[in-house]
Amino acid sequence: MTEHGVVNKLLEAHIKRLQDKAWEIFPYPCIGLFEFVKFNLPTYPAYAHVLSLLQRDHGAVYLDVGCCVGQDLRYLRSHERIPPSQLVGAELQQEFIDLGHELFLDSPEETGIRMQAADIFDAHSWLEKEMRGKCAVVHASYFLHLFNYARQREAAERLVGYLRGRPGDVIVGRMIGSAVAGEYMHPTVGVMMRHDLASFGKFWDEVGSRTGRKLKVECQIDPNTVRVSPEGKRFDHPPEEKATEMVFSITCE
Image 1 (cartoon, one colour):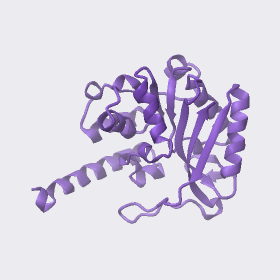
Image 2 (tube, rainbow, N blue to C red):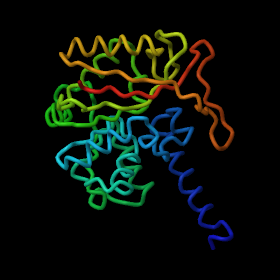
Image 3 (cartoon, rainbow, N blue to C red):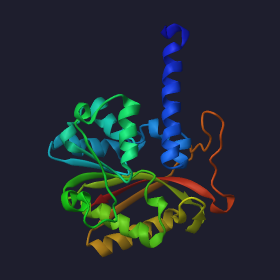
Image 4 (cartoon, rainbow, N blue to C red):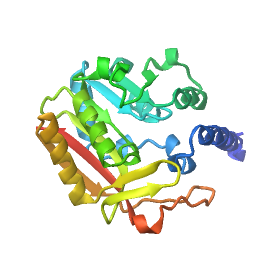
């Protein structure tokens, strides 16, 4: 059957059906671009460092904030054999977590990974009560760019607060930036802060000062960004945004 492409066709149909369901939850461009079935974490320049933190200390916790369907959490468990007890995911909408089990044909019991709904801005959430000061790695992919500057700074301070604060503890992720830093209006989300490399560095300097942490900021523009889905549908940002895609790591010193 594999020689005739039956398995591939069934897999494509399965993914497309779940993409449609995810789009109904919220029409994020990353859903339209099938980012939810890609493993972003291993593509980061800091990935080897992330692995070393998790592999040398089995008490080190990896927290994925905005984990969507939990694809990178599953990658660490299945491909890198990181114990599920070290892996935690938080997602604003429980529906995305549930969709992840439907996508990967597994259950919470089978993965052993804690994935739970939470709002990073809720001071009474389990994130704030249980994760503060507990994590070696925080992953925030396609997350920070969703907010205006003030809200983005608040979220970043929360991310820093989840770290243990030991030298080498790190925040990694991707986000949409701009060749011209500033706040831009997005039709479905509202005002969103777009950074260039210079403003991003200043932003984290401010976050470090406000949280009392010395942070090393590394960020680069990904030149290989493709805003076209496999079906040929474009998800371009408005031309005035001059959008870029940034890959970053923020390391405690």
